Image (cartoon, rainbow, N blue to C red; front, side, top):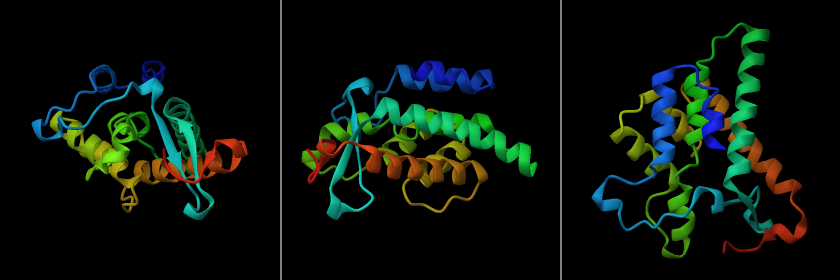
Length: 179
């Protein structure tokens, strides 16, 4: 599914890098080998708009697809209505990759890892030569101030998706504590 979304990236070199990253989600830093990896398709993420209301469990595939497609549509509207140029390749690549390292974070929740999924992603993407704009956009999804239009769009869409997913889930999907 993620590889299909990569088709939205027009820059062939960047598209190939993203596809290769998806196919090879290994952490290359020997210090990170302690993190266990889950399969992307089986990874769940937790959202909360208010920790006192509990956490909503959602699958990572659906969340990522929603974020990528909405980012793409919003970029089109921004360009059409306001005439601002959005680097859609950076935006789409960042949207595809923004939560991808949750495959390590969610399987290690009980061990309270020091590094979250965004930090692991940024570290690995940096090691593999991804550009600074993509690293920054991913960083902006973890409560860092967005400094580019692409980072702002991704951060806003990711937050919107979290609120929507939390509030639209059936009540039996709401967990008072993370599993």
